[in-house]
Image 1 (cartoon, one colour):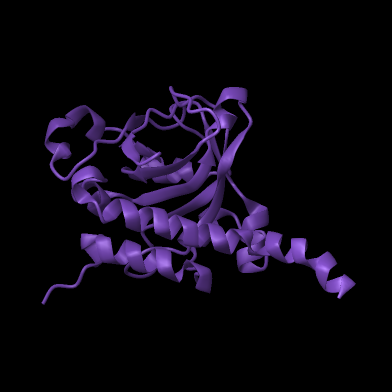
Image 2 (cartoon, helix red, strand yellow):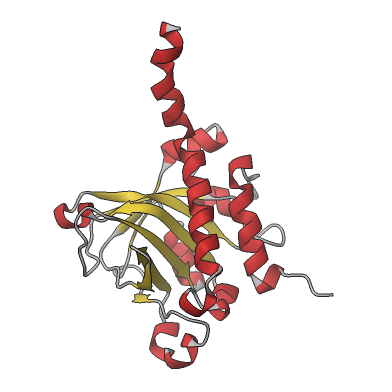
Length: 222
């Protein structure tokens, strides 16, 4: 019994990447279930990749510490649909607002091949290596956002029930090799996960199913 109790924190830590994948699926599903206040469908259809960081601690924005962890998923180069997820962590930068100690969900759409290529580097700085703009909200918002449509990356945040475009500049995204090792059994770079047809772990099934459901490229027609 003593051994089991001692191992409990370690087992919980090992399950964190899988739990975070489920949290990412919940965030994405909730946002897409409210299309009039969420991400325009047209943008999701055109996106090369999506990054979801659930429960990002906004208190970190004040002190400049680690922001949080999440996942990127890209259009698969080897099959129809989406790739297996690669773990990411966000550090540094400024988001232009502070909400004390509450948590925020972050979603980014990568709209260009250039942005995708930079995102798959081991370290990527938003704004410096790819243009980033606050994403428009609502089903018809794209018609009024020509400037934003030229950005490599569009970003949104959801906090305390409010979903809005987010100007995220200067933050760095890195591959989280430790979380990838937990999910895949070895420390894979995100570029290898996305481009080499790595099989998605079971924990990613819910997220990928939702991405397929809401992406017109993968939606079957009768």
